[in-house]
Image (cartoon, rainbow, N blue to C red; front, side, top):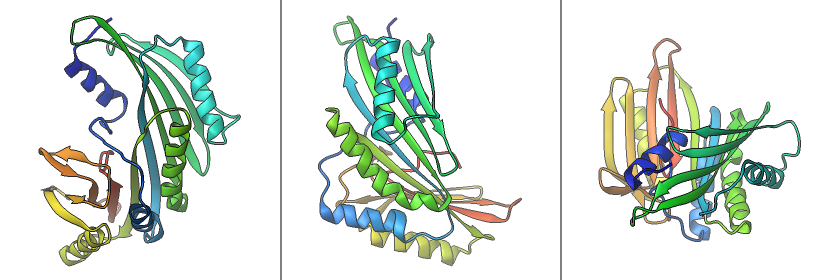
Length: 257
């Protein structure tokens, strides 16, 4: 099994919903911790969900199903998950990969842990293997206020296992009715001010408004139209339900809306 680097990146995007491949992370600083913790958890009402994702390169070994299963179980244990989960291993011929997935679904949160072994070719056209570890925790309702706590916990777990994790926080809240332009602008300005960020790009289509910003106080960043961004706020309106959904993320919203 083999594929070039461009295809490999595309495969990772398919596997993990286009997250974190360009993400860089350095050691946390107190100012960033306090700012992100406040903006992304403490100061949000009508919270619907909070999602934390982590991704890291593990190594270049040809891992067996048994090894990958042991890895996902070890990660689950670090997160306090010791029972009630399912583990599935499969081969994806299209993606030239083997994937072992542990899933645990509950009333307060859903957790998915994956260990992926990719088969590709290096720059010398020789077969190469790359292993990745990915974790997604979806916190339901008001439990989303713990998003930053789990971000830090995941970073510590990855570090303990010798990996430098890239992380993403996403929060979803809602307001009844369609927000006025003035109300949306107030949300945007407050979000950018609280994250000490500058607006970099803005997209508007149908009932969606999406704003990307960049803050020098946050280490992580991705590229949007060849520009660095690391804070993201978006608004989508559901006319049938008459609800405006507010999407906040550091560094970016990685869910469809």
